[in-house]
Length: 65
Image 1 (cartoon, rainbow, N blue to C red):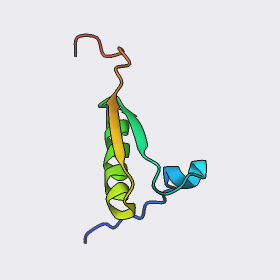
Image 2: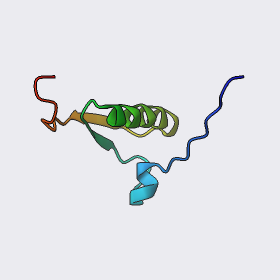
Image 3: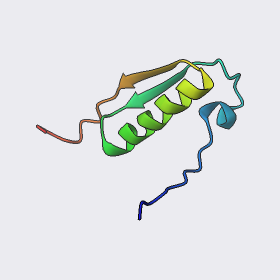
């Protein structure tokens, strides 16, 4: 039997009470949590039509990795 997941999500525009055309900038570290958020925002931006940008942010907590 295939599992189905339901995700509850509030868009950045709703959280900040911004116009739907306002661009969103995601500070992206490359970890699992920011990768998941980036994936969610990519899908949302395609559906709702807002510009999405990402900027790499290195926390410098992974050493030589």
